[in-house]
Length: 104
Image (cartoon, rainbow, N blue to C red):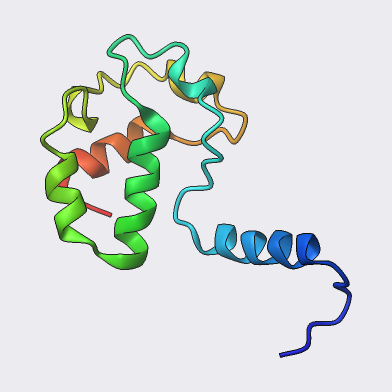
């Protein structure tokens, strides 16, 4: 396949990554800024990544393993400190509620 406008492998990788990002349900870049204020210490990027994986692949095995972890989405108290620190302004408490309820 020929793609115009790309002349290096780095440009191809960048375009593929951009295309993948556009298909994600949650545009989390895993910068971890949202984790700074979390009083229950949820690994927010890991859970949002899992949310994206579930919405794309429906991988039940990985989901079943993840929900056994401590500090999961069900421990979110909805304080919103994560959203105030997020450069993408992602509604993290909203996604934590969806994850805790098994909705994705």
